[in-house]
Length: 116
Image: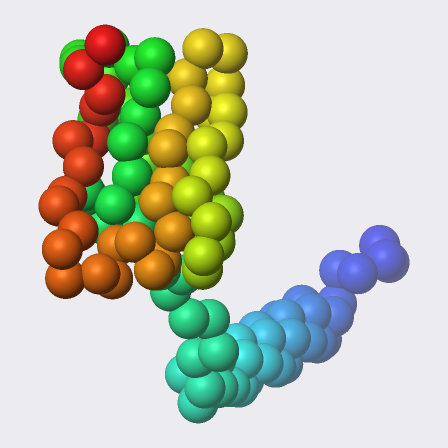
């Protein structure tokens, strides 16, 4: 008699496979429910608003090349009482006025790109 030629082995194999699949489905459902029930702790980081920063060394056509990450970086670097400039890459920098300045009612929005 050949090994595993008995139909009982086939039934046992199928039954084991079904048990594994059911356990996997239950684990996936529990994970999905835990993810749905978990409070969302990730808070969207604030982005710099247009007019509150000014790029230098940028071609007018490149304005749209700056991503949300750049705007988040600008806002993260902004100081409360000190205007700063930071280099983003070779030849491109950004002027970031202080929060005091941009929150002043007399503040006039800056052009997004400096006219050099």
